[in-house]
Length: 193
View 1 (cartoon, helix red, strand yellow):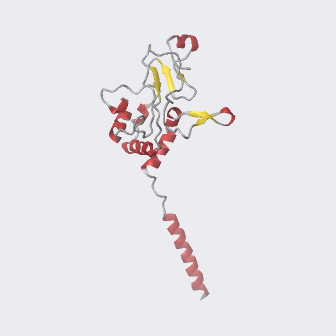
View 2: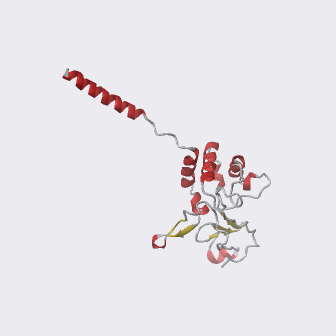
């Protein structure tokens, strides 16, 4: 009888181990996968404003995640003399949200789902098209997406990956922030105070 009880206990334990081993983690949602892709792709580097953290180190402003260049923040300017005098091909502001170079001045876009200032009006198809073609809002005759945005990197991603990024961006809290329009070369004013 004792041997039967021991065998039953060992059998139950083995069954439990096998059942636990076969359980798989649930697949991430599209938005969870998108958050992962946004994080490893460095999107926050330029699209999220920074605030001063411990010891003065800049950290992401978690109240303005992916909201782009703050509308009233200063931005750099650049002239061809910067290459000769400062050895600078491009200049940026301290938050990395605005860049100036031979292309003019470019500003990181507001990627939150704000209806007036973000990407709420973009369709998934136009988002994919923008990242595949390097054209703003995916419009064939639209302006080019400007440096330093590495849109070419996204051409290597699958449509499912780009759709996951779009799903994540749509899940963010909307942040009202009207990012300035790009400044064309030669018209770049001195940096705002």
